[in-house]
Length: 430
Image 1: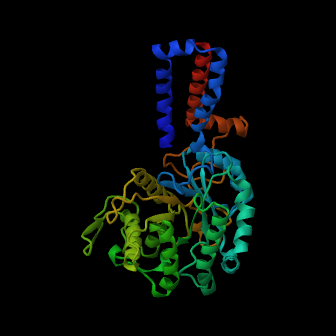
Image 2: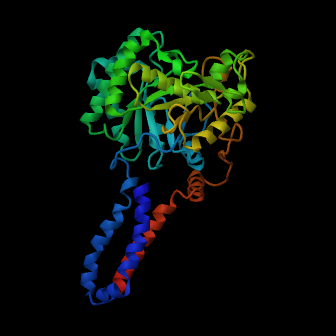
Image 3: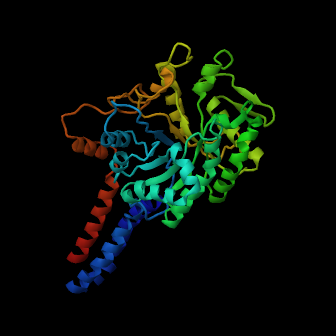
């Protein structure tokens, strides 16, 4: 984007120079055939302005900005993927993560300009770990057909595998990661698609105070080879960080204001001499501390899931609309400041929010079905600054176009095309 903006400034400057008095005299003396001969040069130069926007040409960034959303679909009443793309554009959310590789969803994101992370479910990992061709088959089926139209910037390999109860799955994770990466390399996609695996808080032995956090011994056996691999390739460590779950488990001893980014006395970590005024930052720094203790000081921590339930069972403390709105509003505000944590002030925090919609078919406690920033009909669950899908008599395509124009997504293209057209016409006239 920075290169594009620079070129946007340079084109008018180049045109101004080109049609200065001295240069227009030169052009006037040039024959029409000569000026027509210049057209391919102009077309080539103008076409170069669009290169940063064509997927697959430049190295992909797995995360643009600081704010992303998890798009879960365990529901039978949520909007169609095409409407979801319109919703995300209107909300200016650039980073989207899904938990599978549903073709209708991937296709809907074609040409959207959104960064999409797709997922390899846990049930595929054991086969992929022992057979690279299984990984290749998966990529050929779920990635290759959609490139470059859909910008698939990442693939998650499993979800919350380590720290669970399936030892065979834990043993398979590293092999699956290696084989997926190898398959991407063979297809020359390893530089444009990042692979990673999200971890739950269950991988840590403790997290309070943040500086004392370490990985569990039985987890570290499987974690260390993965960290070695990701460290070699510059991949971040992703963790699912939920202050809501921590508060729900111990509401008598955790200040809810500390969990909600509200005014509170916070906590003091004597080892690092750092003060924390919110649990979200403390959770991230706990992950940094665990990585440091394991020997990975330079690895970045990103948040693959975080959110707050707006409803729950009677025994689920804190699951209210007010608390969900407070947490997500303050979290969004915190992320948009593009700052780091007390322990890593220069490492800007990036996070995927959970979740886009309330998912009415999710199993488990009631809270699992009430994490959505939006309701099933596309309206907002509560106001944190987003606009929901508004009922309209316009067709979906017209509604989508209105959103694009309102949000200025298409205007940069218009300015470039207009500038190039003017340059070409003036070259022919003078």
